[in-house]
Image 1 (tube, rainbow, N blue to C red):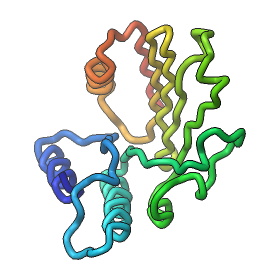
Image 2 (image 1 turned 120 degrees about the vertical axis):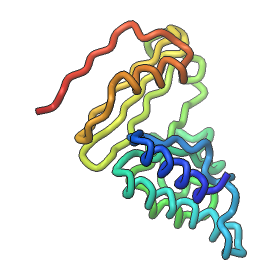
Image 3 (image 1 turned 90 degrees about the horizontal axis):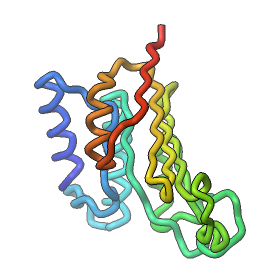
Length: 176
């Protein structure tokens, strides 16, 4: 899969009247290389630049992952910086925000149900998506704050299918 193909699919959807607010790319660093770039690092950098361009064109979130370096593991640092991410650092110039999730060995052994999980946030201009998972309780909490109109039923359906669960509470508050 290439960024060109992903972009083409999204434009096809938009022509059919469906406009994504969020595009999730499962690990962008392994997408097929764009043509015209010899060096692997240049190819990866170009993919990240194209993801940024796509997010600007659709006025939405493009979410992916990257690897952290060995420096990020086993340390007691609370904040991960550029030196903690592996690969070429120039790809970081194309992101709005990047968050590292680093769990200490003590945190990994945590058994309190309300503490065992992951929290992440993605900023989208003046909007955001926040997710909090509670592994031991098999629960997911998702909050979407958007300046752009979206269909909450589509989000509900996608969330149920993605997490293979049942939505117990669903609240929609319209901004005026």
